[in-house]
View 1 (cartoon, one colour):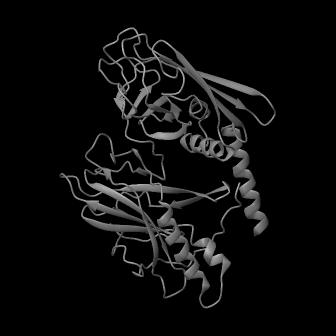
View 2: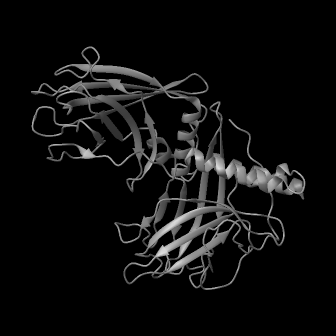
View 3: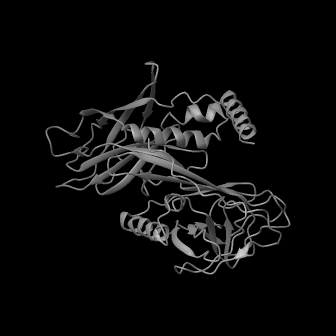
Length: 398
């Protein structure tokens, strides 16, 4: 039996590798940035400038970001009128591993064009900390180059120019306190300030809305990752990680046949509580390493819906959670968990008012709506069919 499964796995891996070549896997990355300050009155700044580059997908969702060290505008001739500032930044190995995986996910491990484009940054992001008089800054063209050194020693360079209108001194300023950004391949606008930024967050949960009639929703949806104890008759809630709400009546969010993404950076104090809870769960009556490691693989996906508009119910498709754990020494590991809703348009709907949940490793159930949730109070019981459940190990840190 094991040999058959292993053979199937090898076949799947061989098929995937033929579909897409992960060119940048295991590579190293250096970012080179040249920033020009325009020749306008009061164009210079004393503010501290933090530069980030990133990539947005076709839905303008942030896939990854690379944030470089802050530059002191008060030091030397930094960001003085009609000057330029050049620097290089070597991206840490563990950060680049994460970027390459994000691009692989974006391409669904099969679309070579999307994968390759993902390594050409299309977002230039400025964060300014105000210092002194005249904190605003008027940039001219910014030149960004990414130097990818592949495992075989080959270097691939990607150059991207970001062009505010430096000849017009009345527009495209960077505000002296806050965040602004420029996009690649974007027509000029006519605002005094560049677009205001909203922070740099990436994706944690990715999923789809099915292509069933009325599958989309105008409701506000909050997705949460949870862990339920695997001990028979003690299937109670151990921890909860709630992600930011998705507003269904905004833009194309949660429309029929679309994808959704949501991201949450877990605070250190919350993760410390999660680790304590997993430890306590594994220590009694005797220590179980397998139970401890499985606890870091969420096994319950929870949806809270707040009704808005006439289309309240929602028919999600499959959802995948990606969790990246970082140790104090910088080592990282990633855990991927799939939650599968059946594509049949008559079942597995989320009720437009209230809470519903999906379990990991659970056989198919029959019902128009997913089971109703009972909230997030610790030790609340959640009934999942664990007949096919397996305890999962934490992957080796890389």
